[in-house]
Amino acid sequence: MKLWQRATGALKDKNSIWAASLSRRNSYRNPDLEAAIIKATSHDELHVDYRNAQRVFAWIRTSQASLKPLVCALSKRMEKTKSWVVALKGLILMHGVFCCKIPAVQKIGRLPFDLSGFSDGHSRPSLMWGFNNFIRSYYAFLDQRSAFLYEQSKHNETPMVQELLKLQKLQGLLDLLLQIKPTSKSMRVALILEAMDCIIIEVYDIYSRICSGIARVLLGIYGAERYQIEMALSVLQKATEHSEQLSVFLQFCKDFGVMNMLELPKATQIPEEGIRDLERMINEISENDKKEDSEKKLGQKENPDNVQEDKALIQVTDQEEEKLHQDLKTIITDKWEVFDEDIKANGNGNGETNHLTNGRNPFSDSPNLLPLVPACKNDLPDLICF
Image 1 (cartoon, helix red, strand yellow):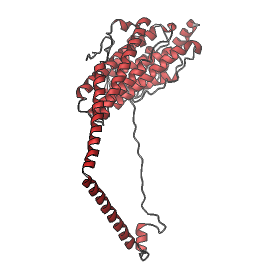
Image 2 (tube, one colour; image 1 turned 30 degrees about the horizontal axis):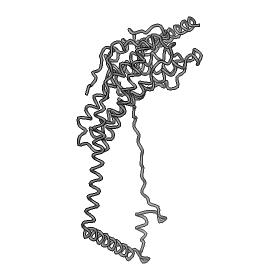
Image 3 (cartoon, rainbow, N blue to C red; image 1 turned 30 degrees about the vertical axis):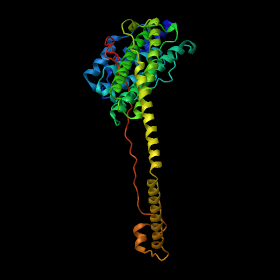
Image 4 (cartoon, one colour; image 1 turned 90 degrees about the vertical axis):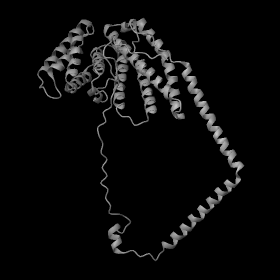
């Protein structure tokens, strides 16, 4: 059965390459690029075509105009496939496109294909549920990674809040990453291990960004407003949870046989001192607020004249408002005359006005965009130690 599936998959790839060669070259189609994409995402689960994957990356590095036909060709292939092998190779290829760090990639928007409900159509579901979940989790991360990149191009908040919101988004991405893992020994195959290599690099990259961001926040937190300190405390507490989850995840990957686990350093632990400092600052702010309220109430008791003056002022204001109300009643009487000219100028005589508002509600495209990874596996991110 396996042999038959491989033969059928190879025939499908050959037919797809032949069909691509017949297409006309334009801004959306590049036959040579499409052929490289098909070869890089072939049905062969025993072989990963690194050479054609690198050709795809070289294409978009050389000319950003190649990004549009690349996305179109890859999306078309992902939408049609029912093979977990093709789907996973496509996600790895898309991940590599993000690693190229080309400005045009930030304008892709949300991934133009949807694998959130992917299910392999060539084997029994009872045998493939682990592979299906792996692909769905990987897709969810890449999709949100793209959205993150797009959102980072719009900065409307203060620097401190902007940094804290960015950290919250990164922590959300890390949550998604830690869900991507094989769930059975039957998934210990070359293609899954290749994908996990990419995931491990991404985990370290995002975790190091979180550590760096926390270091910047802690340096500027003194003198910040209470809500900012509370946001920082929430981020720090989440980072502490992540450091524990990350240790378990990395140990799992090492036991599973992921090669990158033999090279990468241990994860930095988030210091508990930082959490205690923020908690103390919040408590001090609360105590100061209570003290100020008490002093204000005490000042009102010690100066009853001020309270009487405030009440007198309120009474004067109420009297003036009543006088204004009486004046208006005097002006608006039943002797008011309405002229035809007023009717023509202001309306149609039935309480309707002639003012037409051609209110148009224009909308613009809002491509949603996604995340970030080191350019190659051997570029290890620097982890910040506090």
